[in-house]
Image 1 (cartoon, rainbow, N blue to C red):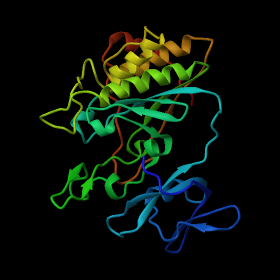
Image 2 (image 1 turned 135 degrees about the vertical axis):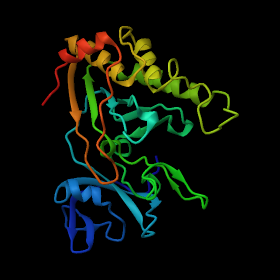
Image 3 (image 1 turned 90 degrees about the horizontal axis):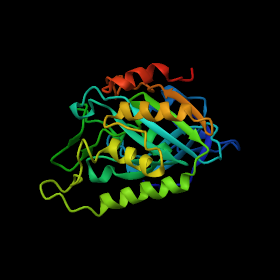
Image 4 (image 1 turned 45 degrees about the vertical axis):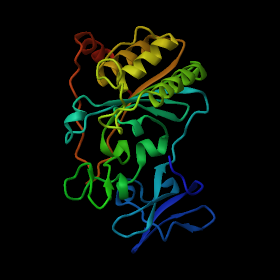
Length: 287
């Protein structure tokens, strides 16, 4: 995560051609920086957090900011598991994706080495579709051009897809944190992938993937009945288990996709395990 400035809190404002954050004491911040249209679509006139990023917008050459909504967060230790619906324009996203959040630190695992990381909430959910985060204007997808300009098509996940969430309060996050950090260490110490150094050499869809690493970490913690090799199946298995445990405070809900022109609506993949098809019907989602 690259960070260039402290966090600012204020109202997201558009006045004529000016876009900025107006703080409580009347200061107008980020006037000389690029503010993405997607933020204005969803949060204009609302109170938000913002901070500058080091990257620049390819079209204007201006540095840009990351903006995210002000929401109440409990100070109690918590676990959140995120099932991200599939991106319809990528074959590799057929089954969606899964990640895990411990006390505001989101662990993301992937076949790409640089995507095995611990990332902040705002960077995971709300990065703007500008600069290197944007999709290619030519293909609408990932692209690295011959001139070195990159379009990773990896802006905020909540702008790219609907996300299903199970939130659990009441467990010992310090123990699980150490387990996940150990998994990350193993990935970084793995032998180099000679054929493609950008890819994790030990990645395996069935035994060493975003799903199975998180599943195995939860098993090591003690939740050994959580099963699955597909993202949605693991999510259902975990949510079903936690909703039965009365010692925890548990919520299951959706974060609907924040629709923007840069991303088509996501889609739910099928549930692969027959047992989980039955469990899914019993899950209680908040409205």
